[in-house]
Length: 455
Ligand SMILES: NC(=O)c1ccc[n+]([C@@H]2O[C@H](COP(=O)([O-])OP(=O)(O)OC[C@H]3O[C@@H](n4cnc5c(N)ncnc54)[C@H](O)[C@@H]3O)[C@@H](O)[C@H]2O)c1
Image 1 (spheres, rainbow, N blue to C red):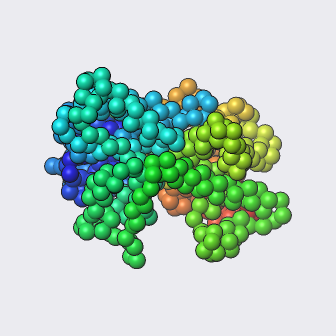
Image 2 (image 1 turned 135 degrees about the horizontal axis):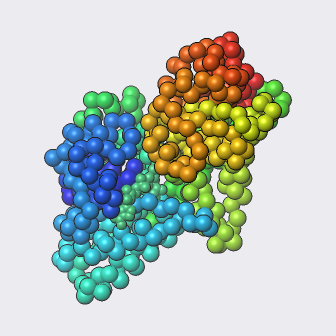
């Protein structure tokens, strides 16, 4: 099938590369010339394991352009995967989605049938809104009734860092549509994934025991809601264990043991029960805010989701308080922050807990040094006016520091020589904000070790 994807970010690019891999002809559209320039040289603008390699292997079936009209004209399926950032009110800003829908409608050709898929995470009711926007443009072109456009919602559940795995081996594919025709076209589009008939990329074998993913077909409003409910639930789960972690500290329990003990109950499950500095990234913060804003619009407060956000903010503040207490104030202290990405496996620093902690430390007039294996460039941009020293080598970062904060659970931080780190510090305080290290080993190496929810 011919597929055009509008928006070539984390979602659009991963989707495009995977669809090309399973045999479709894909055109990815973006308005960012820097991104397009990199892609045309077969370079991925984002750090996502395996993505650049796979891009090279599908090169004859994928193209990149800024021309929406040309790319959609002869497409069978058009996907909108542009950003939906938060407005100051918390509502998701649908401006880019609507803009993309208008541009798409300008390029559609008479006598053809299209399925227009909304992949972005959008406020409930956006599907209806996009139908209206497209109709308006077609009417203004005098083509109403001459082009069939069916709009479907197909929310995306990939996680950055494991995006390719999530695309090739999803838990489920959700399609919300009013008419069975568009569902059938999307079933055809995803058939190699639904039936697992593709040859796995060599570096991404099919997981053992992987079951065929169900295609969940529903109405557009429910599909839109599924995405928000999934993210809100995951955010609440993390906030729950973080809240329990705080109490563990008060009573002397170990939250990692508690999480293991409750996670083995299949009704609870072990994932997303890691206490730490809280969640961040481009999805949970904005999607929980959007859900709350939708509730507010309808006079239906979402108290659990609100509480999850509050706990998440507190988690950053508590970490900084711990440093304040241990160092007897952070003003003028040198604090080295290990990890800037919002989680390991990505260079995405949007709403990263690490950046929040850096800002809190700067407000308290600490001197901040920072390191990340892949996210330094993005963090530099995000913190452009802040006085942060970016250091390539973690040992240099520790030299003369008063404390280290391990803020992102990069596996490479597990390999650090703790003795070597502690030896050159002014005061060897280590706040392990991800409970990544063994407290006994860290203490043995000379650190004053502070974990989250454990002694
Ligand atoms: N990042 C994730 O992990 C993830 C997971 C699931 C769902 N989502 C959702 O998917 C959507 C996209 O997220 P993302 O992280 O890929 O965003 P992103 O910011 O990485 O990418 C969006 C891209 O769209 C481009 N764009 C904006 N307007 C455009 C237009 N009119 N025409 C062409 N390109 C345009 C931007 O230049 C940008 O490259 C969001 O709604 C997000 O909530 C994201």
